[in-house]
Length: 350
Image (cartoon, rainbow, N blue to C red; front, side, top):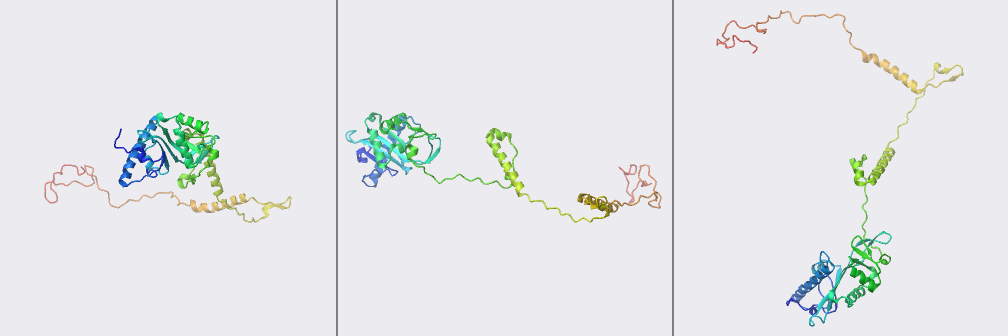
């Protein structure tokens, strides 16, 4: 027992107290120091009851704490006390935590509904005080205060005891379980209207530049993404081909010049004029033009019939030295300046 704790009856005046993120009970009076002491004691009471709730429901984490309530402005916490317990000091015997959540839920037709209902986030009564009507008193106080009904509520992770409580006291025979761990009554969607958040799916803009080029078929892409990937790729290829065809400029029309008819085009048997084929005339004109240009292109200097060889110079070629050089070796072993030439007996080309 903690003797430094304030009595529950001193902190909470009413049997059922509604708290918000300020952790200030309605009707509490005192100075700043007393207010801080009260909030510290109330936080300990809330944390202790929240731990008991998580243990009773076999949860991995505590749902209800004073710190989480401070950080959730849209959540409300209802505390139920027994004013006669502990020698008249009072005791907290139950809690009910509610708040609105933005959810995407499936109805009976598997249609996704976007709603923002009031949710039961945590509901707990001490085990030794259960089956005495305390839970129904706490739940009815919340429904009357918020002007709602049990069919309009979404329950976060309801336990078997919670389902039995709803069925026994409010006639909800079953709950529709959702993938996000919430559960709603069957007539929930007929009562609660959809709440559009204004969020929209982003529009996919067409790729530009090199990213807009069609991609070849990918076997790995089919394995990873399935057949839908290939169908989408084929649809894009068809769209790309149609776009190229429509954007392609029409080819200019070919103008045919009037043909001059001569005597060779006259048909003597029928006394009519044969129209010459434009393609044939064009070919003939092109052949004549090529023949006119061909002599100028193929002209080349004539090849002489005889070749005349002339000497490069009139001086006779010098004789080769014994070492193979055209320059003769000096007769003396001295250089031009009178020094001894060590290379006198060696090849000049080494």
